[in-house]
Length: 159
Length: 159
Image (cartoon, rainbow over all chains, first blue to last red; front, side, top):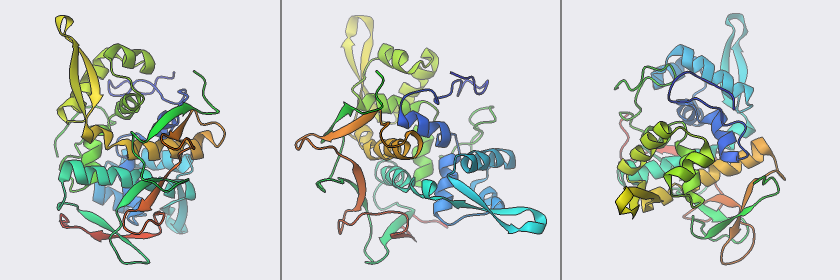
């Protein structure tokens, strides 16, 4: 394992773990990163807008955006070549994080803020009704939760 | 905002943000915490087993477990009163994080490890087929993604 920071908060990299949760967190598990991505899904694209909305330091934001661009989650699109300014836009890989963020938001709505205190809601675009996301089985369509599945070793299992 | 650590990695608390993603991350966004929860879903319950599987320092693990217990995500169940030993078991609030972890794992499987390299797979318990979790609309049952919904202010919106 590689040493990453001297802070007691994080000493090791998860990159060597044979686990897709660990590998995902190695990229998006840094403090601030999921809030940056939340803002990307809300349509924020510009450095100054992230700074203003999040109250994040410019140094940390620069590092986080760089990590996300290097990981292929965001792409840089020049909007002012003369001044070297970019929009930061979600790629397909980035948009694929929508279920993770939505599940996290709904958990916070239900278990922390509580029903009736949701800052945001979703509307199903073509139908106009409220959209509450639910995990279902892609094969049979039934709702899934921790108790309806069991974990089995996959093709990449090592232990 | 309250100052939390002196590390450059995290300087502020997300607790005051009117956002359920921020509030959720305030509790489960710490480095290591989602991997601890992943192990809880895999049936791990004991301090020494977390230490061994994760290679996490005992100090950090103690702090993380305490946060999760205080937040009502894990509960302590004594298994050896004489030696003051506990199992750490997911509560209903904790089990409700399953969609978040599952979405994150599937994203890592698809976008980092790649198909055919999944360390774990899910089997739909009562049916025996492989269970791939999919976000669908609880109202109409259609698959949901970032493009099929629009965000509208909820009852708790402040800005």
